[in-house]
Image (cartoon, rainbow, N blue to C red; front, side, top):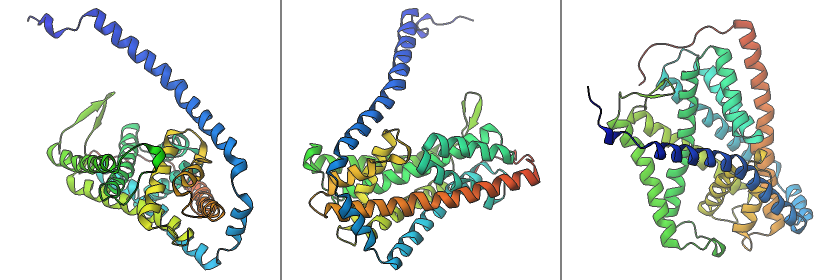
Length: 337
């Protein structure tokens, strides 16, 4: 059997490609931490300009019932995030009880927010699932489904806000409203394209490092988008209430979405300072700095810190449950949905 020599890339091309990959790996290894240090330095250099006294006064003026209501919204958001892994459970058809998969997701989300995605979103989730008896391939699919659910819903919601013109780009962004609308349409098309891909490629299998991967059904993809968009909307609702409705809900949600993506790009645990910096930059002049900082600090306490306490309790409960019941195989050979 002959082999077409034209189909074989020249040795020089392979060497150049390998060199490019190696260079990119080195750049990525050092560029991300360097970016984090730079952002952190900028935030610290501006920290003395923040009206901390005004922020503390704003915190003290919050009615207890309002804080309790925001905590309820935050709790609902964390509970809804737990459903992301129920989608993964439905897709992979593993045999873990639904409450256990939900508890693992909620626990990892609380750690993810406060300690970073690699610790909470990936490492802790993988440990808890492995302790429960899931194999690496199933865990990878569950985590992949969760990440896709979160960011596809983000793109759908943010894209809708941009496309509708509800978010006005700040002057320092050097981006026109038309361009922003076009970006929003592209984000929505990407989310729609995912649903179409799930419909077209249903039943197809891809192998990544020897692991079989499948796309979920289009019905499950629609559930992913709906649940994720609702979760991001709840997050925006919490901040909207803390700002005392001084800023429109659409703008409040848009700023939160912008702060979230900036927080992902900067490797700082819990995005410390990032959320504050983005809100000050985008809402300066709209809300007093003291009121704004008070709202952000209250949001951190109610959405990040208090749920971490609940996450620690859930983590201890899951560890005790695994110790008492062992780790039976939780994988089934059934095909994904």
